[in-house]
Length: 428
Image 1 (cartoon, one colour):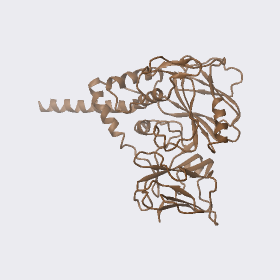
Image 2 (cartoon, rainbow, N blue to C red):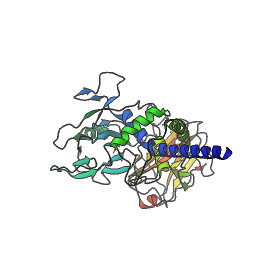
Image 3 (cartoon, rainbow, N blue to C red):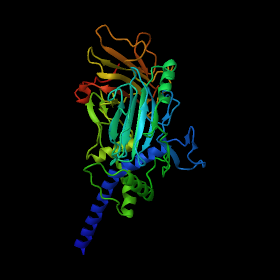
Image 4 (cartoon, helix red, strand yellow):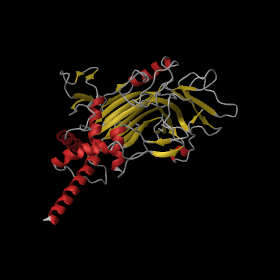
């Protein structure tokens, strides 16, 4: 009897392990569909609301939405936001045929439209690094499409499924004249059908995109079922789905809790680490893919941008606004980028910007008045109180722990190979 009991227990344990693996594997699909619900527009500028009811889940896809200013302390919707660019966001639905992304002349500006599939693979880009800054018409199509490519198409991108998240970033130099120029560029971004007609579609997003709690098993399965129908697993990836309902009910909270602690970032030394390290595809690393989907969804590939992050100083102590620090890049050993870099300050308690007397939340190679030392080195002071004139100051929150993110847009080879020597932040 004991042998049968042990065998049954082992079988149940194996089944639960398999169910957790299935949840880990499909969680990116669920989280991407949640983000689709959260970031698509209820209203079309010409066609009106997708549905008249305020609580409707109907939204518009194949339509851009934009932010027109850089985020600041008053913005609390997005954690660890950048302070360098504005965003242009769209969800593509390719189920009724391909769409064309029209983009205008961008001059010398840094810009990128990153395309993520429903499994969070950052599989393609349109923008400065990959396709340049001239006017472009990019055709995006679902698997199995073999139609005729219309004239005037500059690039063709094959997606792995019907749903694609398009995340655009456009560099802004100031909140005045340059912001207006960027706004005009954003207005010129369009998503159309190959014949030039508006590609906007109404879709049922299925879920409340603002609900970040662990989903109920019935909701998780329904969303994943529908997403799988439209977005098959990446090539070479097998999936055993669906698991038994009772097992799924137990596995969901266990997996979501596990993802809070799994997959430590890439340690760079000196207190620096990179939380996200992907190029174009997560491959068979399902656990890291799920962790990023839950905690850093929308991350682009490292060839476009890298985000080394520091939460501790050179002695391993937590960075705190009650102390003064210096970050010094020695001569010739500053960040190596083909676009630009910035160091951004965040309050650790909520991962948001902190109001300060000079209204500065980041400092970098484009900061007006940035001062280099006589030998060519660059020192940045991180502290709450004003260090005085002639000092590169990034204000810290008074009396609170903080962390900083070194954003590297189009990082150089040493960064990509993880052989760059990141200097530690030293307490003064």
